[in-house]
Image (cartoon, rainbow, N blue to C red; front, side, top):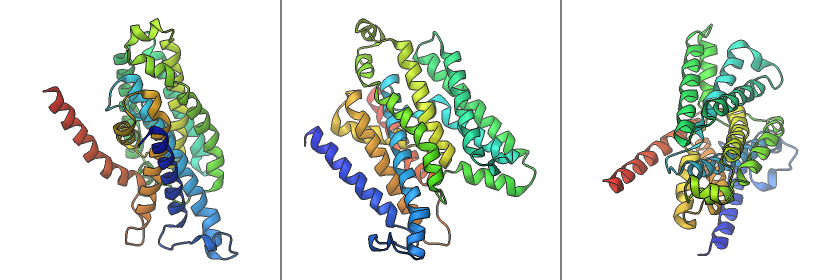
Length: 321
């Protein structure tokens, strides 16, 4: 099957996953009830529609960010968490919940984006003048520090209810999100995605090595700046509105690469579509788990992603032996 046909297939699957997300739940809402003036119509407009739109956008930016990070670092095990943006945005959200700022309009989202913005500035400063190894190490330092500070904030929470609220948010979910959340996060995701999609040509040149890319006129410092800011805006906004949803950026580019090949620019858009499909489908399935509540999306993705990561690791160890 040609690349164009595969892309059209991914588009159809994305629409199918989106419609499944609109319908699925403890109570199924069929298209005939979407505009009804009753409880089903209210649930659809106020809860299902924003949840599906956020699942689509968050999955797309995570899949796209993962493809860009793997292309830039030339490491198939890289994903957006390498930069520490997710952990830093999560720390900002945790501080907002701890301090009660989350009760203010846009309080939690604003603090999470401030955390992501701080990680962007710190990573640019730490990795300035260094190669990919320094870039990765800078991200690891930021991620570790943010994780430690998050654990510290949880440990000094004034009561068990505050600690429980923080932990529930960190698990990642799209439950009870509103259209106001969509309109708040969408501009940041859109701008970040535009920056990441613009890196395709440079990532292709980088497959020849840094010297080869420079000989083709690629400004590596500018490329790194664009990637850091793009991932920071897109992933930071997704964490701010949903909590931490991991492994999408790791899994999807590998699945896409097996059909599209190794050229980085060719897998950017398919990875975005694949990320949307995976996130929407997973979010629909967690709602169908028997019981009064639902499994958190972040937990479901971790259960799915950890074995996938282990399989990849074993495969690369075997190929390196």
